Amino acid sequence: MQIKDLKVHYPIRSGFWNTVTDHVYAVDGINLEIEEGKTYGLVGESGSGKSTIGKSIIGLEKITSGQVIYEGQDVTNKARKRTSDYNRNVQMIFQDSMSSLNPRKRVIDIISEPLDNFERLSPDETKKRVMELLDIVNMPEDALYKYAHEFSGGQRQRIGVARAVATNPKLIIADEPVSALDLSVQAQVLNFMKRIQEEYNVSYLFISHDLGVVKHMCDDLAIMYRGRFVEYGNKKDIYTNPQHIYTKRLLSAIPTIDPINRKKHKAERIAVEKEYEMNQDKFYDPNGRVYDLSPLTETHQVAINVNSVKESD
Image 1: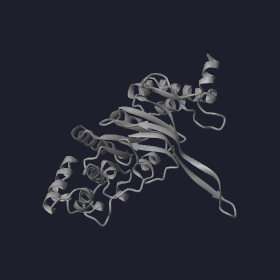
Image 2: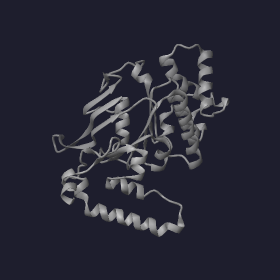
Image 3: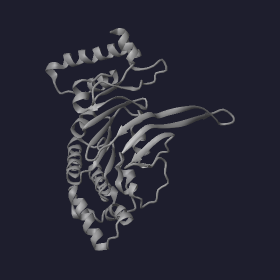
Image 4: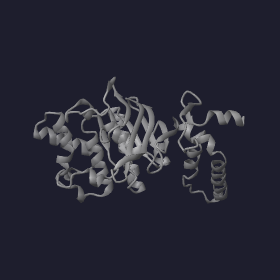
């Protein structure tokens, strides 16, 4: 899948005639290429545009401009049948497991719905397939005839994972799939997702604000701020050689259980904040917009004002 110059802008209306006076630039020019069997991370604070990208790819948000190209075909804002190949091959795990599961349906009906859309199975075959999916995410057989409210948050999220993989998709967009769960349950859900990837060679677009979780899951990372990528690279690039000040601030904010070096970590955070205050012109234009990505190496790109860097050199 190729995402080319993706933009999602929301109009701001005001005045007596309710005219458009400005826009919210939720996503403002994103390029991304997703390969088979790899995991890509989108990291950033709330409101940076991460979830909007995921919803745009799957068709839940209207794209203002740009292209989403899937296996050579332009699928941008296309009206698709419920049974289209794209809907089968691109699935989503939502952040709020409770609101994403129909409270009036039992688990067997929730998980079998995508099977009914794309495969012609008998009732017995459907039940067998649903039981296999529940087994993959380590849910008991008696969960079949229960409702969503009868499960814990972690169990509901596992049901969401089972539903997402029911059609053997090629890409799963995971929007904050473990942010609302406690640490032990987070580990279980992430391990199930890893196991599913190994078994089905599925790709993940993993949306999160937790750099620790992303480091465990992802091959490549994109750091987002104000609707744009500020840095892109593999795990080694981002965690050992961060170049953008926003990436440095995110990394310095990761909690560390290390009381011996507490003063050292505090000094590092203060140094990062000082660098941010002194060198903002290198990272944002006069309007506060993030600069375009510039390549540092074959795998590492950073959004920085190249002219200001040359002048300082």
